[in-house]
Length: 158
Image 1 (tube, rainbow, N blue to C red):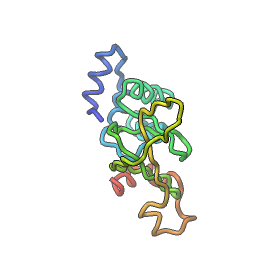
Image 2 (image 1 turned 90 degrees about the horizontal axis):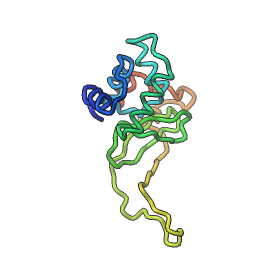
Image 3 (image 1 turned 30 degrees about the vertical axis):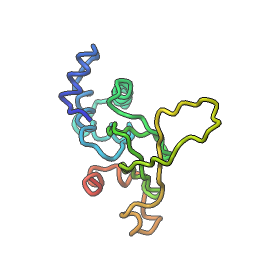
Image 4 (image 1 turned 60 degrees about the vertical axis):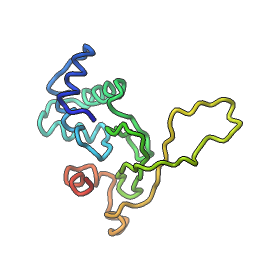
């Protein structure tokens, strides 16, 4: 994902309003590898700017998605996630804590079967589900879906 400064320049060049709230969202997303929900981004933004609304965060995330700077992904973990990694990749999802990890691998043998009436494939997404290494060491009942959405978890899972 582009740096907060590059995103600020891009917003301005497209005539979009640049606010301290939006710049705070840019900073939270930069280098973020946990595929955050809008609520998780909001929780981090309000640590520095307590008056930022969830609506502002959603609007900024949707603007970034519309601009092609972010991907909106549905992985069956509850809330929609946002992925700053725009390179082709797949995901691994922990069924216990909801952690999402990028998987950079190519599956050339995966293709739409013939006879699909001209369906045009624009991308392929493969999702592997299981338990992450942290959850595999703990009893299932001790893990909650928000475990890996914290700053501490981001440091552990990098």
